[in-house]
Length: 172
Image 1: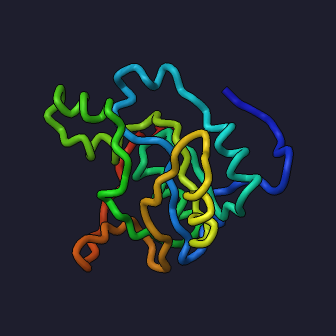
Image 2: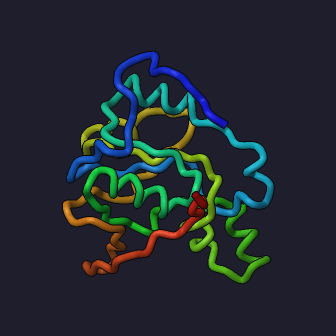
């Protein structure tokens, strides 16, 4: 399937525009889409339009291949990395239900399951605060900060651990 379109207002959101110090915002919650949610995706068009009218988004990507893999792609395209507040990442109730079936931690499903079709955005700290004060069609959660060193980093108790991106990798 191929789609062609245009951006009605302003510049398109690309993966490659993240800036050091940006806040990473996530829409919705992640994981467990295999429990049939993937058959009924809800595109975040209304949310994107509301955000576009309020702030300058530096970089964005939709999460279709897994939160960590798509976040890593955004960071790689921008030549930067991210320090994550892993505890802040919203885990979908489906991931919790799936974890009971698979014996895998619900966070692991949120980290690597695909087809969530949520948005990851990077914006300035001031714009993130502005968005947190708005009533948006879908909640946004700050999950990390863009940093100068590449990779995905877990920030916990003042220490940093490098995390491996996981998700669906398309065959060529």
